[in-house]
Image (cartoon, rainbow, N blue to C red):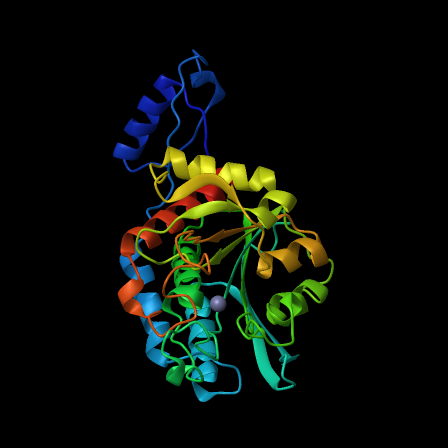
Length: 334
Ligand SMILES: [Zn+2]
């Protein structure tokens, strides 16, 4: 649905036509007073319950590490879900070299809507989870992979629910590509060799070799750690450097929807996340909606890269806020 201007008479006649079960047939001659306008906002409601269940489903598979059967089963399920929602799905298989030389059998999953429309918006998240709990206070569990309910699961859960909504709305015409990056979270632990380029291997691969040649999108939104209770999404520095207009637009929409308590307008330090490579390698202005908990040493919250990153940290109110904001951004572009 689009934002449209109707005269009062037009709205009344539309109501009468709809009440009679007829087709909407706007007619210019009905517009007698263009000053009297209303804006019917037909943005669907984002269902946080569904999104929550989608996060829980991922977590139920166990840690989603490349080279494991849990990873394979999760990717199969993700592809099935997107197919169910009517998306055009592309699986992009590649081998990513981890910082310690391990070859990761990786898969980016791309779900596209309205592929005939050249006006496109990119939405992304990472679907893999971290192989070590390098920030867990219990060092005896360092080598156990984490469940990643928030770190990975939450962004994917929100995007699956958005895909479900887009798939059932034939009036939505804008092009949307949902890209789930793999092998984001296998970077070198701090204090070891590797550096920032050892992270985000799926987005680096896709940005150099997108799923379609000469891929372009007006802008992109990355969701990373968007599920924890009482989050603080700030205007993160890399996003502000490469895509300030997008950032301001999204934060303004969040504020207008009453989610200002979660979407803090403070600019915070730049991070390297998947959006950095999308911005620098393929040139799509892309922001990162990411929780920045400045009260913790990591800035990413107490549960970040620990075994506490399970369903207990996920808040439906947060999923609702992020999902409704992103959905509103999409429908305002349509
Ligand atoms: Zn992570």
